[in-house]
Length: 171
Image (tube, rainbow, N blue to C red; front, top):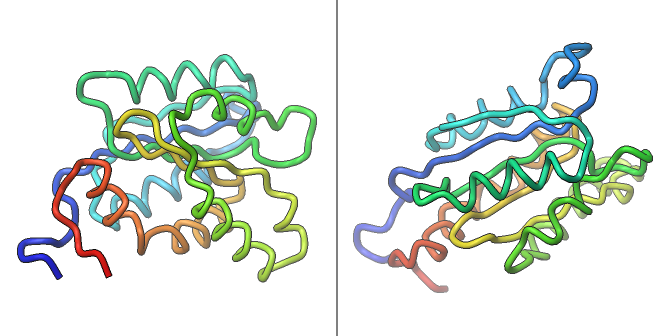
């Protein structure tokens, strides 16, 4: 281990909930709340949260605004809109936002989901990097968000250190 290497200091996170129902006040934001709680428990500072409808432009605008600010968060967690329903457009909104994709994260999340239940293969979640911000998408289910945050949490410190060019251990 690199001396002094540990949790990435001062990691700021934002949580975006993509849901027509939550946006219109018809449902509670269970998945956004869960991701904010998990991020906080993992030592990240949740500096902003937002809810947008299932619309490509709204999703893109929020993520780009967060990632392109001078004090951009290191981590953006997006929940909702990753399924097969006609209004599930989160992958289409995020794909053009990324400078680089992170397919290993997507593969790990889907592999876990498929072991839990066959419908896990229907998730279309995508993740990637814009500038120095890691952007991860999760399903809209609080249970799935909880499970899948657990899948990615062990690699977040290392990934964020790499994005910040901080010292890391390479095994």
